[in-house]
Image 1 (cartoon, rainbow, N blue to C red):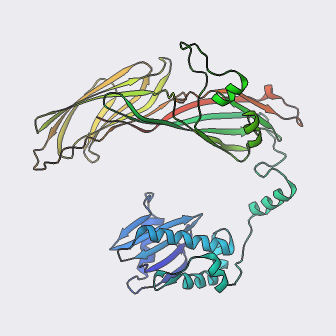
Image 2 (image 1 turned 90 degrees about the vertical axis):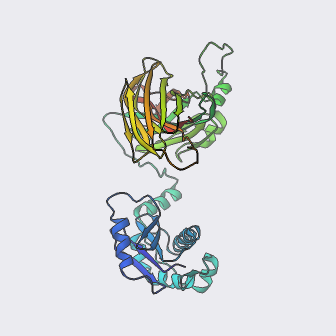
Image 3 (image 1 turned 60 degrees about the vertical axis):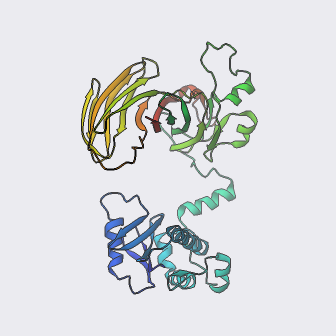
Length: 432
């Protein structure tokens, strides 16, 4: 089972160390520090294997929890155990910080002795543990927690302090969307959805109340301004499937009036998240043609079409065309952008800096294959596309953004407002 458990701070200093088995030496502590915490490249995997030793880690704030073993253990169980350990510690002494760990190291060692027996997890139930270990943890309250308690008692708004002043009152609103698509080779949409965020940067004086309105279908139907019966007109409203809001939004007003009213925090924050699946304007379409010529040659032709207004400019366009594992060489021909075969990724990467709407670009490639003994047919992974376009693919529009501040001498007209729409590719794929 688990050979040892260690806790580190953000500098890689060991705060807690407990070794349960003889096969885990002191060098394991240094190995994790050097290869994970101080690694030059960001370590994305929560499991790291070094010298036949497995390191499982999670991070809570600035504290690293690492479980070490040389045996073939169930990874899901180790992670479940590490999360339970952090929950038990939180129940004893609150937030897991370096100061709290140092102040309660005796308690932590007691808990580890109860929870683990020779590396085997025994009991992680907080209620039962508190009947054995009755010692109270030492909690060090931060300034934020102290002010939060004060705010709860006095009813003050916790996310914004009073007395904020700016020479220029400005409000920046960004509608950021990720477009996800899976399309068949014939152009049929198999699945499509947009995951969007409304991000606001607020530089407003005092304690202003803001009202934000969008072309949500329910909101417009309530006001009698829903979809027009004329099919020639563009869509005026969108159907939002689900949405979540920042704590500053007054949910009661949203439920009753369908208006988003809020007192914004100072600076940048995420006002809302939403998801739509209907009437999505797909910015690009990929038309693939892959033809195998015998066993040693393959011809690839891919056309990219932009489906937005000619006045709009798409940027950072990147098409990744997968190739078989037995590819020996690729000859590429493209009239627009730059294309290169990357053998390490088994893909042709085609980059276009800019592309205006209602245009198309084409790439042709001749792929030479090594005659292999493998009879397994190539699975043909989908062609993926990355892009960025300055409009909302879901059709979301900001109808109004109003600011009210009765105490200070400025009105809605004195506030400078900026609205920006950006749609980026999420998982945007076309089967070939």
